[in-house]
Length: 419
Ligand SMILES: Cc1cc2nc3c(=O)[nH]c(=O)nc-3n(C[C@H](O)[C@H](O)[C@H](O)COP(=O)(O)OP(=O)(O)OC[C@H]3O[C@@H](n4cnc5c(N)ncnc54)[C@H](O)[C@@H]3O)c2cc1C
Image 1 (cartoon, rainbow, N blue to C red):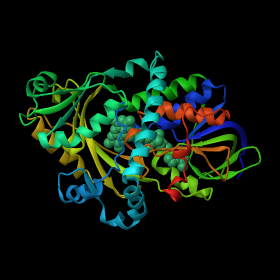
Image 2 (image 1 turned 180 degrees about the vertical axis):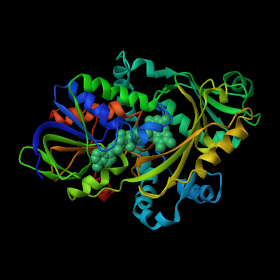
Image 3 (image 1 turned 180 degrees about the horizontal axis):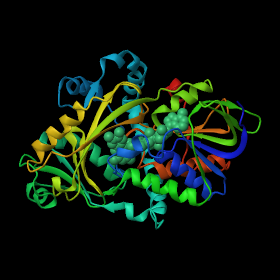
């Protein structure tokens, strides 16, 4: 059964987080293997909305949010659902989510997220200089739309927080909304426009392009599934489901929503769950979309991508294994048609992805305690693409024994025991 070849650094997971980490570790001179059970960009990195959402510094668990959840759950077109078969297993996650929404914890989360986003901006700036990756990054501007003046005003404190953190945007009314995106339903009279709304035009292609250039630089991409990790004297040993094993000096766990199982194999518990998200990608001709549109009161986005118009969002709690319920995608299309009456809704491709989500909406980036040469990098929720380069910088610093660019205390896997 044994096939324990000594590798230098093994990154488990070939999503955007794993591939970006492999890129940074390779640049730091490490000999890297990516271990991916399926194919590069098999998980949520494939079908996300592609938005580089740097201004999204305000944590979702915020004071008063727990009162909104029941209203969302009762709305059949609403942004949140819980699959009954999974509800009981969510209690610990929601407990920590509720605690994270306390004013003091929310303000602290805001600070941590802001620091991470600042790093995300500067690191992504470096990554996009790569001539192979630059063509994927486009600036379409972002239009954040509100149904009413009331909901616009309710969001004002969050915009004030973003302005305080240095993000630039301005309020627009009906006339400018129509200029920025012709064809929107007339109900939209209140919006925020940001003209530096960056996005990746093809999220799956972007992740695969990183992997391809790594392959060209000698990185091994091995298709196999990690089952468990054990500490060894010099590093760690990964047991694979095919019966073989792989030893390495550094092991990075970047398996997105599936990372919890590997942490558990080291005896380490963390409240990672998944917020399942749905979308439909329609042909490009379905609507003359000029930029990213975010329908704030309904928590979904419409983004112009290389191969079409992607309409997605929604949060469904249903764990890793329940089958997809594509009625969620249908509902988003129904809403999008209401807000963009000229939208052609035929010929779309539906998709579900598993966002790897921590209750405080901050990722886990840090060392395992049971096996210090194992580094965790998962739980990026709605922001994994956005924070991929920052995460890779931090993992690369940790693995080199350098002081991380930001304090990682609040991103450790076991932070919830003391919330
Ligand atoms: C609908 C939707 C829209 C989104 N929009 C955005 C957006 O606009 N901007 C943004 O920044 N983020 C967005 N996100 C979030 C983003 O997609 C995720 O945070 C990000 O993709 C997580 O990347 P990852 O590499 O951690 O996980 P994944 O992409 O899920 O990759 C994990 C990989 O690990 C592999 N794996 C799992 N277990 C094992 C194992 N045991 N052994 C080997 N391999 C294993 C899987 O096959 C998979 O390839 C969105 C998500 C969804 C669902």
